[in-house]
Length: 135
Image (cartoon, rainbow, N blue to C red):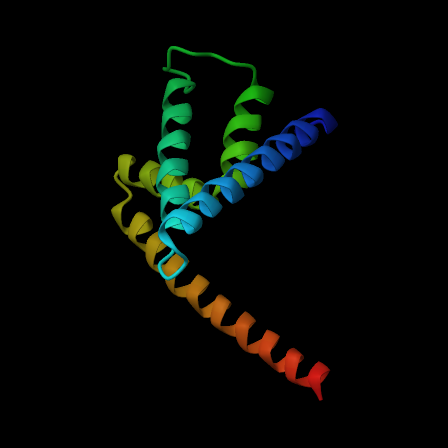
């Protein structure tokens, strides 16, 4: 059961991850322009690498055994604030390693299709609200 301090550690990590995401994405936008989302791609790839590294290095069979709060700070907080794509990717990899190919494929398909649908619906709702506000 999470304690209050667990939430504090996750929140602190999330703040750091969010700032890091903003800094990296902004640097890519300044360097390469904003026409294509290179910054988001760089964040997602680097976040996936980092969460994979931490997950395996600190797993029960790993060589590093940090306290639970440190692992949560890094994986849920920092990586989660940096990019939730890293969590999605790690969960999909875990399913694949367990031989759950159908579930892994379903996770990818449902996540992509449902999230694209949700962003489309959210955008449509936002546009409708803007039209109501604008007159």
